[in-house]
Length: 104
Image (cartoon, rainbow, N blue to C red; front, top):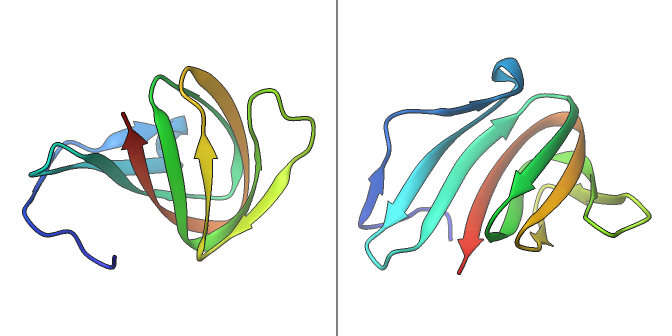
């Protein structure tokens, strides 16, 4: 899906890591919540309450999921799943455009 129809966008940006990671929240009419964001090169650690699907639209990164022992490379056009109530780490190599879908 290259666009969202019937959506509300929260105007206030979600800003993390001194502005190196920024996203906007998108609420779809069916109750689905997503964030559209951009990450600059660097290393980041995130905590999540909900399960997430991280779709990488462009860029290149490595991800280390909770309870994993090895980093996994993810490139534009690929995605990965993040378990609920977990911590995950990212190493961003190229400026990265992403869409995060929260799973209930």
